[in-house]
Image: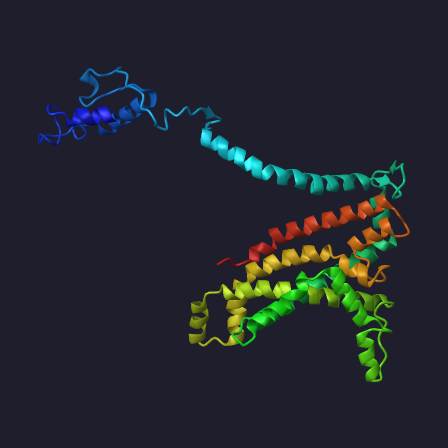
Amino acid sequence: MLKLARDYNAPGATGRRGGSMSWLDAGGSHAAAEAAEKGDDDGTVHGGPGGPGDGRRGQVKPPRVGTARSSGRSRTGGKYWTPRARREALVFLALALPNIVLIAFFTYRPLFANMYYSTLDWTLGAAQATAIGWGNYVEFFTSSDASTVLGITAVFTLATVGGAMLLGLLVGIALNAKVKGQGFARSAIFAPYVLSGVGVGLVWLFIFDPVYGVLSWILRGFGASSPQWINDPKLALLMVIIVYVWKNLGYCAVIYLAGLQSMPKDLMEAASLDGAGSFRRFISITLPLLSPTTFFILITSLLSSLQAFDIIRIMTRTGNGTNTLIFESYLQAFSTYNRAGYSAAISVVLFVLLLLLTGLQLRFVERKVHYA
């Protein structure tokens, strides 16, 4: 291209300087440009200012130093593999490889090992195990415990997820109002979520204790007796649900608060000018705009509730009416049974359930999400 420019600017060249038609205007402009580009690629000139008969065809141009095309690129799979790309790939591997190794070793390796253990008749601590294939799964689904465990898991999950999301939305709306002490109220609401589940369970166990608990002391002051929260299976499940909703309420409230604060205020003002009341704006505008937030909270809360363990373990040690899938798996392996293979099978059932629920939510629930 530099050579063509010199020829074009030469005193004897026919172009715009002489007032006559340039070589680009005389025809073959596109072909000449393509020929110049090809000349840049392979180092030869296939045409010149004078066209095909210019006499310069076949002349070899000296390679340009410092250009991208002469920097030693090699084609691999149709893509350029430059030194810079290699350096970036090495940096990526240096940063990502340790994490990949840790995730593979501490997440996927135990997962596949647990799937293998679920096919064994193995007593925890025993040196020998017998392969029984699908025997543990058949025993679980054909036993009377399966319906009880799955039913308790469903009730606990629906109650905790639904209660935390509903109350969290109401609290988030209240925290969105501009009042005094707003920052303190937000911190107080969110604080239980970051507390240890063991500590929360111990404090609430002291409150619900039917003999020495704070709640029983208050009820006795009014002449009433305390319910048997721990001994009654139905009340034990209700007790755990109340504590779990209280602990996760702040998480849902803060996430909903973030969604409320990101809403366009001009849309609310336009609806208000059109005569829409507060309830109508909430139903027609707020809820649809909060659907991405609701979808996110639904997935995270559902996965968290199905894996809830610490509060249940602290408040009901033997699982009296609180035998969810994960707690039943713990009891089978580390309680009086010591059935590690059967416990592993229940864990695999929980994993498949989590996988199916997440896939169904991503497949069907996300369709009703309105992204701004």
